[in-house]
Length: 390
Image 1 (spheres, rainbow, N blue to C red):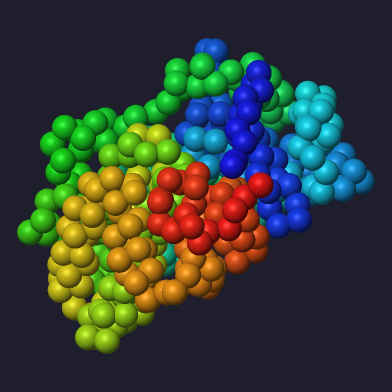
Image 2: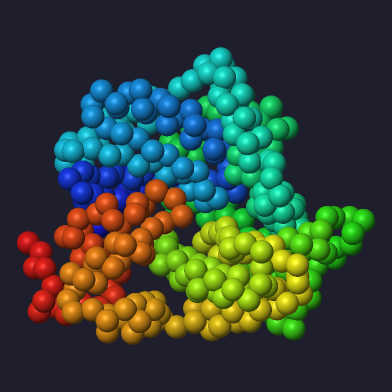
């Protein structure tokens, strides 16, 4: 089983990982959090601290045989530690590094230049431009309209004093029970939950590069760019946890992208395979689908029809959904649970959007895969033929 513990300021998860252990600390400080104890922080502060702290952790822990990976999301900053010893043997070393963290103004200035390069790297390109404009229109005047990294202007506002104050308030004094005081729920999401209808921004060619597209189905968002590239947002009220999200995310992408994309390509509706990006928070889940098509109206209509099916699909319980997707489709073709696991490994079924929680399942041991399935309560395997765990 995956072990979950709770520290005074952090939650952390420990689980076996192929001859290694991973300890993950989740800090309740993400890109959407800009207010705490009367203080306002520039966009990108959480990501800035993640860069500085992960550098510090790597220097301190590398000689102890502990590898570090870090990631900033909208609601969390996660730190994953890979090591050969037991979690309890290294936890104190890790927590001490968190408690004594400090940086100089020079280090902050150097890191700012690095992050600016990161921001510029993703600022160009048609898909990134479309996605950024899309979020700014759907979530006006909110953090979701900007990159997790922040903006060039906000990065200039971040200095050593802000870093130290934010670290104190969110990391050292940021107890989980105070997290909800900073949770941001856009008014548009509340409207969606009440009406279950599309968020349609009042756009015009003069105001934006986008034209809003009104489909026969009113549950989705669609914009087009230059009459060729389009982006569709499938917005779902989220009532499942992070583990469930990984599964749901795959279901959406499997049916909308892997299967449907090939169909649209074969029929000449789209010019290239569809691509997706996800925006996940505690309140909602937004899946965005990108594509290019010479017949824009037909492409959007057909993808939205597929979205209607997916939306109905998500209303099933988690166990029923997975059974429909896996058991009925795959298990009838297989002779044993071992073959089932091999198939999952080949398909990277549990591969996450990031490496924060799960890496590709092909790197995991059989023992852990069975533990994972047990944890998710899928009840797909024949208990009489499954591996017996000690």
